[in-house]
Image (cartoon, rainbow, N blue to C red; front, side, top):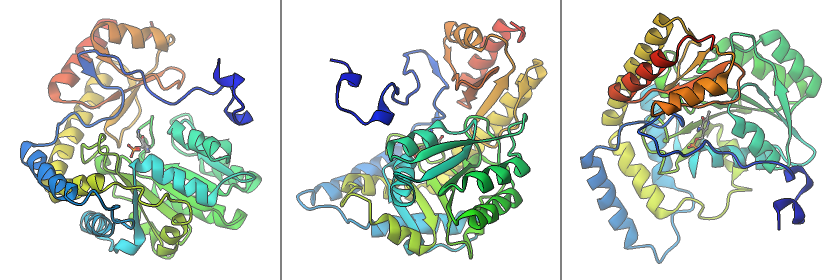
Length: 366
Ligand code: PMP
């Protein structure tokens, strides 16, 4: 029996599930994870908070995750200087679930979503999974957004949802606030539609968050995650900031009690350690910049990065270079962008191992 023999939805036929190869190699720099394990005092605090939650696991968790949303709102207010209250914040199991809830609410059958590719491929996959048609919008050759072409695409297709990923995965490119505003205006003039700014990597950016753009723009949403900056990919905690009406709207599709009491307790413990964890982010930003400089010194092309990963190239046989780096014990990512590979910034030792591997596989024209 094959999947396609089952009576599945037509649009799922022939599709493959999303996921990077999980290979057991010494240096894994392929999934944009934070290389630093949570510090021991935080691990102990999680154990304490989870033990307390465990005493009440006979009951459903707080369906509205009030304490957690309060803490997330306080984090946003403190780090961006733009005041958010818990009614303007919503949390779910990873920002992927946030994006899914948004598409279930604002997309769906007969509706479309548009993103500027190459970008985070889950935007297209979650769109398809929710029955939302996907439209691939353009980028410039340097991976910035081509504003004129982007406006034209929005005017032509009149999408119900527009994705702007900043910093963009897999290129690392941040989007200027002016560009986001122009795209928001274009999207409102065309329909109006929901504009989702995916800021999964924003804590690593040279630029400030786009959060303050939310003021007076009820159809704008910023999505965030604790998977990267908080070093908690295993926790599965994503969140959004938006007008309170957007938070009310996603209640129509969220599963009741979707965020377990264990998840809420763990996330709250991590938020207590924000300063320590943001300290690691500072180190990673320095390492990211060092790897960018080193790759450029080696004569490679590197896309300016505002994230915890770096797009580098260009290679005529990208797959062969990916394999050659892997043969030296370092796993990087081939996102299918012709000529380019992506590496996540790791610890100094991991980055040195990566740079050594790259030196051995040069010249880039291979
Ligand atoms: N957005 C972007 C741009 C990402 O790269 C990722 C993770 N790779 C996510 C969202 C999803 O992250 P999570 O579900 O772990 O919050």
